[in-house]
Image (cartoon, rainbow over all chains, first blue to last red):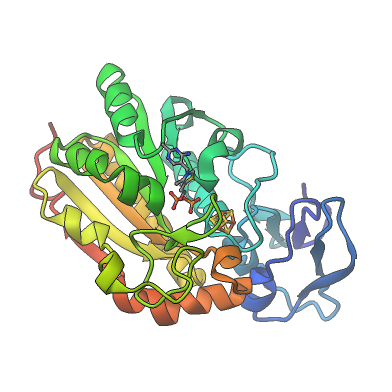
Length: 75
Length: 251
Ligand SMILES: Cc1ncc(C[n+]2csc(CCOP(=O)(O)OP(=O)(O)O)c2C)c(N)n1
Ligand code: SF4
Protein backbone atom coordinates (compact mmCIF):
# COMPACT_ATOMS: atom_id res chain seq x y z
CA UNK A 1 0.00 0.00 0.00
CA UNK A 2 1.21 3.44 -0.86
CA UNK A 3 1.64 5.41 2.31
CA UNK A 4 2.90 8.54 0.63
CA UNK A 5 6.55 7.41 0.69
CA UNK A 6 8.57 6.41 -2.36
CA UNK A 7 9.70 3.17 -0.72
CA UNK A 8 7.41 1.14 1.50
CA UNK A 9 8.82 -1.82 3.40
CA UNK A 10 6.58 -4.46 4.88
CA UNK A 11 8.58 -4.81 8.05
CA UNK A 12 7.00 -8.07 9.21
CA UNK A 13 8.26 -9.82 6.06
CA UNK A 14 11.80 -8.46 6.30
CA UNK A 15 14.60 -10.82 7.42
CA UNK A 16 17.41 -8.23 7.29
CA UNK A 17 19.44 -9.99 4.58
CA UNK A 18 20.72 -6.53 3.66
CA UNK A 19 20.61 -6.91 -0.14
CA UNK A 20 18.58 -3.72 -0.53
CA UNK A 21 20.92 -1.71 1.71
CA UNK A 22 23.88 -2.89 -0.37
CA UNK A 23 22.34 -2.16 -3.76
CA UNK A 24 20.75 1.24 -2.98
CA UNK A 25 23.05 3.75 -4.64
CA UNK A 26 21.76 6.56 -2.46
CA UNK A 27 22.36 5.01 0.96
CA UNK A 28 18.74 5.55 1.85
CA UNK A 29 18.16 2.21 3.57
CA UNK A 30 19.38 1.03 6.95
CA UNK A 31 18.71 -1.60 9.63
CA UNK A 32 16.26 -0.85 12.40
CA UNK A 33 17.16 -0.85 16.08
CA UNK A 34 13.99 -2.74 17.02
CA UNK A 35 13.00 -6.24 15.87
CA UNK A 36 9.81 -7.34 14.13
CA UNK A 37 7.48 -10.00 15.56
CA UNK A 38 9.57 -12.76 13.96
CA UNK A 39 12.69 -11.48 15.72
CA UNK A 40 14.44 -9.91 12.75
CA UNK A 41 15.83 -6.42 12.47
CA UNK A 42 14.11 -4.83 9.51
CA UNK A 43 14.96 -2.26 6.88
CA UNK A 44 14.01 1.36 7.28
CA UNK A 45 13.77 3.89 4.49
CA UNK A 46 15.04 7.36 5.21
CA UNK A 47 15.19 9.88 2.40
CA UNK A 48 15.82 13.07 4.34
CA UNK A 49 17.76 14.63 1.47
CA UNK A 50 15.20 13.58 -1.12
CA UNK A 51 17.79 11.58 -3.10
CA UNK A 52 15.56 8.61 -3.90
CA UNK A 53 14.87 8.44 -7.65
CA UNK A 54 12.52 5.44 -7.39
CA UNK A 55 14.94 3.21 -9.31
CA UNK A 56 13.52 0.17 -7.45
CA UNK A 57 16.84 -1.68 -7.23
CA UNK A 58 15.93 -2.41 -3.59
CA UNK A 59 12.69 -4.09 -4.62
CA UNK A 60 14.46 -5.92 -7.45
CA UNK A 61 16.83 -7.60 -4.97
CA UNK A 62 14.31 -8.35 -2.20
CA UNK A 63 13.81 -12.11 -1.67
CA UNK A 64 10.69 -11.45 0.40
CA UNK A 65 8.81 -9.22 -2.06
CA UNK A 66 8.55 -6.92 0.95
CA UNK A 67 9.37 -3.67 -0.84
CA UNK A 68 7.09 -1.52 -2.96
CA UNK A 69 8.34 1.52 -4.84
CA UNK A 70 6.45 4.58 -6.02
CA UNK A 71 7.40 7.69 -7.90
CA UNK A 72 6.04 11.18 -7.93
CA UNK A 73 3.71 11.86 -10.79
CA UNK A 74 4.67 14.65 -13.16
CA UNK A 75 2.44 17.64 -12.69
CA UNK B 1 2.16 8.67 -6.53
CA UNK B 2 2.60 6.18 -9.33
CA UNK B 3 3.60 2.58 -8.64
CA UNK B 4 7.03 1.57 -9.95
CA UNK B 5 7.17 -1.81 -8.26
CA UNK B 6 4.46 -3.68 -6.37
CA UNK B 7 4.23 -7.27 -5.20
CA UNK B 8 3.11 -9.59 -8.02
CA UNK B 9 -0.46 -10.92 -7.83
CA UNK B 10 0.94 -14.41 -8.40
CA UNK B 11 2.48 -14.37 -4.91
CA UNK B 12 0.27 -14.84 -1.85
CA UNK B 13 0.53 -12.64 1.24
CA UNK B 14 2.11 -15.54 3.16
CA UNK B 15 5.57 -14.79 4.52
CA UNK B 16 7.93 -17.50 3.22
CA UNK B 17 9.91 -19.90 5.41
CA UNK B 18 13.25 -19.33 3.68
CA UNK B 19 16.38 -18.23 5.53
CA UNK B 20 17.54 -14.60 5.28
CA UNK B 21 19.11 -13.96 1.86
CA UNK B 22 17.96 -17.28 0.37
CA UNK B 23 17.67 -17.30 -3.42
CA UNK B 24 14.42 -19.27 -3.35
CA UNK B 25 12.39 -16.20 -2.35
CA UNK B 26 13.96 -14.12 -5.11
CA UNK B 27 13.30 -16.73 -7.78
CA UNK B 28 9.72 -17.23 -6.55
CA UNK B 29 9.25 -13.51 -7.01
CA UNK B 30 10.62 -13.62 -10.56
CA UNK B 31 8.42 -16.57 -11.53
CA UNK B 32 5.39 -14.75 -10.09
CA UNK B 33 6.23 -11.55 -11.99
CA UNK B 34 6.57 -13.50 -15.23
CA UNK B 35 3.26 -15.35 -14.72
CA UNK B 36 1.60 -11.98 -14.05
CA UNK B 37 3.13 -10.39 -17.14
CA UNK B 38 2.18 -13.29 -19.40
CA UNK B 39 -1.39 -13.14 -18.05
CA UNK B 40 -1.58 -16.90 -17.47
CA UNK B 41 -2.07 -17.02 -13.68
CA UNK B 42 -5.46 -18.68 -13.86
CA UNK B 43 -4.18 -21.55 -15.99
CA UNK B 44 -0.78 -22.10 -14.39
CA UNK B 45 0.04 -25.24 -12.42
CA UNK B 46 3.34 -25.50 -10.55
CA UNK B 47 4.92 -28.65 -9.16
CA UNK B 48 6.86 -28.17 -5.94
CA UNK B 49 9.84 -30.37 -5.06
CA UNK B 50 11.02 -31.97 -1.87
CA UNK B 51 13.50 -29.52 -0.44
CA UNK B 52 13.26 -26.06 1.05
CA UNK B 53 10.73 -25.11 -1.64
CA UNK B 54 8.36 -27.87 -0.54
CA UNK B 55 5.84 -25.28 0.67
CA UNK B 56 5.79 -23.39 -2.62
CA UNK B 57 2.04 -24.03 -2.80
CA UNK B 58 1.62 -21.63 0.12
CA UNK B 59 3.59 -18.88 -1.59
CA UNK B 60 2.30 -18.94 -5.18
CA UNK B 61 -1.15 -17.58 -5.84
CA UNK B 62 -2.05 -20.21 -8.44
CA UNK B 63 -2.43 -23.99 -8.40
CA UNK B 64 0.62 -25.84 -7.14
CA UNK B 65 0.89 -29.51 -6.39
CA UNK B 66 3.63 -31.46 -4.69
CA UNK B 67 5.58 -34.46 -5.99
CA UNK B 68 7.73 -37.06 -4.24
CA UNK B 69 11.44 -36.26 -4.13
CA UNK B 70 12.84 -35.87 -7.66
CA UNK B 71 9.56 -36.67 -9.42
CA UNK B 72 8.17 -33.26 -10.45
CA UNK B 73 9.00 -33.85 -14.15
CA UNK B 74 6.88 -37.03 -14.15
CA UNK B 75 3.97 -35.25 -12.46
CA UNK B 76 4.36 -32.28 -14.83
CA UNK B 77 4.29 -34.67 -17.79
CA UNK B 78 1.01 -36.18 -16.65
CA UNK B 79 -0.63 -32.83 -15.96
CA UNK B 80 0.51 -31.26 -19.23
CA UNK B 81 -0.58 -34.24 -21.29
CA UNK B 82 -4.01 -34.37 -19.63
CA UNK B 83 -4.51 -30.60 -19.61
CA UNK B 84 -2.48 -29.28 -22.56
CA UNK B 85 -3.90 -25.76 -22.27
CA UNK B 86 -2.37 -25.28 -18.79
CA UNK B 87 1.01 -23.70 -18.20
CA UNK B 88 2.91 -26.33 -16.24
CA UNK B 89 6.26 -25.89 -14.54
CA UNK B 90 8.44 -27.70 -12.06
CA UNK B 91 10.50 -25.92 -9.46
CA UNK B 92 13.34 -28.11 -8.18
CA UNK B 93 16.52 -28.01 -6.14
CA UNK B 94 19.77 -29.74 -7.03
CA UNK B 95 19.21 -32.59 -4.59
CA UNK B 96 15.76 -33.11 -6.04
CA UNK B 97 16.58 -32.68 -9.73
CA UNK B 98 20.22 -33.74 -10.02
CA UNK B 99 20.44 -36.51 -7.45
CA UNK B 100 17.37 -38.62 -6.72
CA UNK B 101 15.54 -37.21 -9.76
CA UNK B 102 18.31 -37.33 -12.41
CA UNK B 103 16.54 -40.06 -14.32
CA UNK B 104 13.22 -38.19 -14.35
CA UNK B 105 14.63 -34.95 -15.72
CA UNK B 106 16.66 -36.67 -18.46
CA UNK B 107 13.68 -38.60 -19.75
CA UNK B 108 11.27 -35.65 -19.52
CA UNK B 109 13.76 -33.65 -21.61
CA UNK B 110 14.25 -36.54 -23.99
CA UNK B 111 10.50 -36.87 -24.52
CA UNK B 112 10.50 -33.17 -25.30
CA UNK B 113 7.68 -32.51 -22.87
CA UNK B 114 6.30 -29.03 -23.42
CA UNK B 115 6.97 -27.91 -19.84
CA UNK B 116 9.13 -25.32 -18.07
CA UNK B 117 11.69 -26.32 -15.46
CA UNK B 118 13.18 -23.94 -12.90
CA UNK B 119 16.29 -25.55 -11.42
CA UNK B 120 17.73 -24.03 -8.23
CA UNK B 121 21.43 -24.86 -7.98
CA UNK B 122 22.59 -23.91 -4.49
CA UNK B 123 25.32 -26.55 -4.37
CA UNK B 124 23.89 -28.26 -1.27
CA UNK B 125 20.91 -30.11 0.16
CA UNK B 126 19.42 -27.14 1.95
CA UNK B 127 16.41 -28.52 3.76
CA UNK B 128 18.14 -31.49 5.36
CA UNK B 129 21.03 -29.48 6.76
CA UNK B 130 23.62 -28.76 4.08
CA UNK B 131 24.82 -32.17 2.87
CA UNK B 132 26.82 -32.53 -0.35
CA UNK B 133 24.78 -32.31 -3.54
CA UNK B 134 25.89 -33.46 -7.00
CA UNK B 135 26.58 -29.76 -7.69
CA UNK B 136 28.79 -29.16 -4.61
CA UNK B 137 32.05 -27.60 -5.77
CA UNK B 138 35.38 -29.39 -5.52
CA UNK B 139 36.86 -28.70 -2.09
CA UNK B 140 33.63 -27.20 -0.78
CA UNK B 141 32.87 -28.05 2.82
CA UNK B 142 29.46 -29.45 3.63
CA UNK B 143 28.14 -31.50 6.54
CA UNK B 144 28.99 -34.70 4.63
CA UNK B 145 32.28 -33.44 3.18
CA UNK B 146 33.80 -31.89 6.26
CA UNK B 147 37.24 -31.71 4.64
CA UNK B 148 35.85 -30.45 1.34
CA UNK B 149 34.49 -32.43 -1.62
CA UNK B 150 37.09 -34.89 -2.76
CA UNK B 151 36.48 -35.52 -6.45
CA UNK B 152 38.37 -38.81 -6.26
CA UNK B 153 35.70 -40.08 -3.91
CA UNK B 154 32.58 -38.13 -4.92
CA UNK B 155 33.25 -37.29 -8.56
CA UNK B 156 33.20 -33.82 -10.06
CA UNK B 157 30.26 -31.44 -9.66
CA UNK B 158 27.59 -32.23 -12.21
CA UNK B 159 26.85 -29.60 -14.85
CA UNK B 160 23.23 -30.50 -15.39
CA UNK B 161 22.50 -27.85 -18.02
CA UNK B 162 25.39 -29.00 -20.21
CA UNK B 163 24.36 -32.62 -19.67
CA UNK B 164 20.81 -31.92 -20.83
CA UNK B 165 21.97 -29.85 -23.79
CA UNK B 166 22.93 -32.99 -25.69
CA UNK B 167 19.31 -34.13 -25.62
CA UNK B 168 17.36 -33.49 -28.81
CA UNK B 169 14.07 -32.89 -26.99
CA UNK B 170 15.42 -30.00 -24.90
CA UNK B 171 14.93 -26.78 -26.86
CA UNK B 172 16.06 -24.05 -24.48
CA UNK B 173 18.57 -24.22 -21.64
CA UNK B 174 20.06 -21.19 -19.91
CA UNK B 175 22.07 -20.73 -16.71
CA UNK B 176 21.55 -17.49 -14.78
CA UNK B 177 22.07 -16.14 -11.29
CA UNK B 178 20.53 -13.59 -8.92
CA UNK B 179 23.58 -11.95 -7.36
CA UNK B 180 22.95 -8.35 -8.43
CA UNK B 181 20.29 -6.26 -10.18
CA UNK B 182 21.69 -6.83 -13.70
CA UNK B 183 21.70 -10.59 -13.21
CA UNK B 184 18.24 -10.58 -11.64
CA UNK B 185 16.93 -8.82 -14.77
CA UNK B 186 18.66 -11.42 -16.97
CA UNK B 187 17.30 -14.25 -14.84
CA UNK B 188 13.79 -12.92 -15.21
CA UNK B 189 14.22 -12.63 -18.96
CA UNK B 190 15.33 -16.26 -19.16
CA UNK B 191 12.40 -17.42 -17.00
CA UNK B 192 10.01 -15.45 -19.18
CA UNK B 193 11.40 -17.02 -22.32
CA UNK B 194 11.13 -20.49 -20.79
CA UNK B 195 7.41 -19.87 -20.13
CA UNK B 196 6.81 -18.16 -23.48
CA UNK B 197 8.30 -21.23 -25.22
CA UNK B 198 5.68 -23.37 -23.52
CA UNK B 199 2.88 -21.02 -24.54
CA UNK B 200 4.23 -21.17 -28.12
CA UNK B 201 4.39 -25.00 -27.85
CA UNK B 202 8.13 -24.99 -28.55
CA UNK B 203 8.94 -27.74 -26.03
CA UNK B 204 11.14 -28.48 -23.02
CA UNK B 205 12.67 -25.32 -21.54
CA UNK B 206 15.06 -25.30 -18.61
CA UNK B 207 16.47 -22.44 -16.54
CA UNK B 208 19.22 -23.18 -14.01
CA UNK B 209 19.64 -20.50 -11.34
CA UNK B 210 22.85 -20.29 -9.26
CA UNK B 211 21.22 -19.44 -5.97
CA UNK B 212 22.58 -18.44 -2.55
CA UNK B 213 22.11 -20.69 0.49
CA UNK B 214 23.86 -18.48 3.06
CA UNK B 215 22.91 -20.59 6.08
CA UNK B 216 24.36 -23.86 4.82
CA UNK B 217 27.38 -22.21 3.24
CA UNK B 218 28.13 -20.61 6.63
CA UNK B 219 28.25 -17.17 5.00
CA UNK B 220 26.46 -13.89 5.50
CA UNK B 221 23.98 -13.17 2.69
CA UNK B 222 26.23 -10.64 0.90
CA UNK B 223 29.21 -12.99 1.21
CA UNK B 224 27.08 -15.75 -0.29
CA UNK B 225 26.50 -13.56 -3.36
CA UNK B 226 30.26 -13.09 -3.56
CA UNK B 227 30.80 -16.84 -3.29
CA UNK B 228 28.59 -17.36 -6.33
CA UNK B 229 30.46 -14.71 -8.29
CA UNK B 230 33.96 -15.85 -7.36
CA UNK B 231 33.55 -19.62 -7.02
CA UNK B 232 30.36 -20.99 -8.52
CA UNK B 233 30.40 -18.94 -11.73
CA UNK B 234 33.95 -20.15 -12.44
CA UNK B 235 32.70 -23.71 -12.77
CA UNK B 236 29.08 -23.17 -13.74
CA UNK B 237 29.34 -20.68 -16.61
CA UNK B 238 26.38 -18.38 -17.11
CA UNK B 239 24.64 -17.99 -20.43
CA UNK B 240 22.46 -19.69 -23.00
CA UNK B 241 23.63 -23.29 -23.23
CA UNK B 242 21.18 -24.37 -25.88
CA UNK B 243 18.52 -22.58 -27.88
CA UNK B 244 16.89 -24.32 -30.80
CA UNK B 245 13.56 -22.54 -30.37
CA UNK B 246 13.85 -20.78 -33.70
CA UNK B 247 14.48 -23.98 -35.60
CA UNK B 248 11.66 -25.87 -33.85
CA UNK B 249 8.25 -25.80 -35.43
CA UNK B 250 5.58 -25.65 -32.76
CA UNK B 251 3.98 -29.05 -32.30
C1 LIG C 1 12.61 -40.22 -1.10
C2 LIG C 1 13.25 -39.21 -0.21
N1 LIG C 1 14.58 -39.30 0.03
C3 LIG C 1 15.20 -38.37 0.81
C4 LIG C 1 14.48 -37.37 1.40
C5 LIG C 1 15.18 -36.36 2.29
N2 LIG C 1 15.36 -35.05 1.66
C6 LIG C 1 14.50 -34.05 1.89
S1 LIG C 1 14.94 -32.64 1.11
C7 LIG C 1 16.31 -33.36 0.45
C8 LIG C 1 17.29 -32.61 -0.42
C9 LIG C 1 16.91 -31.21 -0.71
O1 LIG C 1 17.91 -30.57 -1.41
P1 LIG C 1 17.67 -29.72 -2.73
O2 LIG C 1 16.84 -30.48 -3.68
O3 LIG C 1 18.99 -29.29 -3.21
O4 LIG C 1 16.77 -28.48 -2.28
P2 LIG C 1 17.08 -27.29 -1.29
O5 LIG C 1 16.55 -27.73 0.04
O6 LIG C 1 18.55 -27.04 -1.29
O7 LIG C 1 16.30 -26.17 -1.85
C10 LIG C 1 16.40 -34.68 0.86
C11 LIG C 1 17.51 -35.61 0.49
C12 LIG C 1 13.09 -37.33 1.16
N3 LIG C 1 12.31 -36.36 1.66
N4 LIG C 1 12.50 -38.24 0.35
S1 SF4 D 1 18.59 -23.85 3.90
FE1 SF4 D 1 19.39 -22.75 2.10
S2 SF4 D 1 17.97 -23.20 0.43
FE2 SF4 D 1 16.94 -23.71 2.38
S3 SF4 D 1 15.78 -21.84 2.96
FE3 SF4 D 1 17.78 -21.74 3.98
S4 SF4 D 1 19.08 -20.55 2.57
FE4 SF4 D 1 17.31 -21.28 1.41
